Image 1 (cartoon, rainbow, N blue to C red):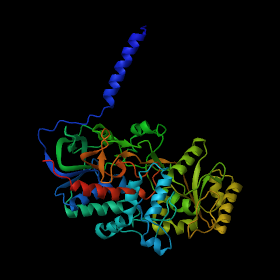
Image 2: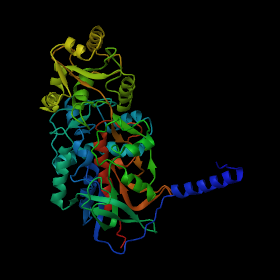
Image 3: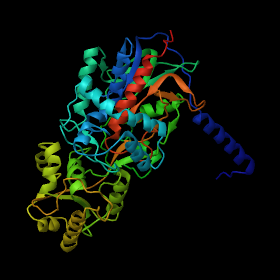
Image 4: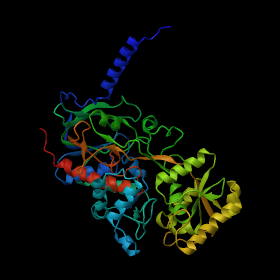
Length: 512
């Protein structure tokens, strides 16, 4: 057995500290390749809302040769499976329904629910651009929204989001892809970015990629070097599907938590952005969706019932007590934490509504989806409240009182005991049949990421100045949402700041 005396301990400690210092210093400079295989004005990484917005805006602002790189075999990433809702404060649909709203009120909601961690100027830029972005989507990109319907997500003070006609983010992404093709912006699939190349002069000058990459096989594909004469724009999204990486920031988010994200939401470019010196902010704020069901994988579809019907015109109930346990329109963190705490105590929770709530909400905004939820057995239908209570071992008298209390508060019109506001067309709960879904939060969104300025430029950790030739937007960035992202605001963030980053990338002077 060896002993460690004071001198050897100090020597070992010094060696360890030295090795740690070496590890934490970002390797910001890379050797330039002997030759570039291809050249572009602007290279955009990621083909979701932000990446496609950045690429098409760069093209329209004068970048002659723009390309989008996507590591997965199909485009869109999480944006395609997004819920297809977009915050539009001050829109015509709100005015037609007598709803008073403004960009300033949306900003106030975002900062309040974000616990003040939001960067105010980033929030202001995003909210002020909401209505023009909606008009751009409709008039230029060709996106179709459900006519005359406005929804309210948790944490918003008024109903303000519109719905894509197909009820998914693909209703936006598919139109963006069509538009990109029309103006000559190619989207290259299965093209994995292995390195962002930053020269000794501090400028990002291109990327090392693997063309023909197969997801999960890091050595697959042909290595090539792509030159970005003006800029690289990072729109690679979050890391919700990367268990090991997300646990570095939030250790409780183990493999027992499913994720709503598609499999490609992993950490490679988060690590690479750090390596070249990007300042990464607020990366430990990782959001779980509170409305998911454990009876399906990934995002699924039960959330459209749990949020669209039960959270707005029904109740969320602790099965062990028969009582409500949270404001169903609180922000996502408040609700997810409440469900997790109950589940950890062995107390399952359900979202519950009657036929009226289903008819007034999801049957009008997402036609046909109720049948799909029932067929997949992720939403369950019961002829009587007694049958539902028996199935989930809910104390029937307590459940009946919960519903009676809700109805009494609705009759008074003064808000309910949990502080939830009533929607304008809400009816008393009691018209069977009854519907419910189990609740089990899943890892959903990364609020932190690369720090950017108002032009979308990525900020260097060592200088607090923009990294020349590098921009970023969307979920790969931080500062917009703070501690809690409000539903319908991710789509807005990605589109607004993607366009800003792309437009400014196009204005960069070519480096050669």
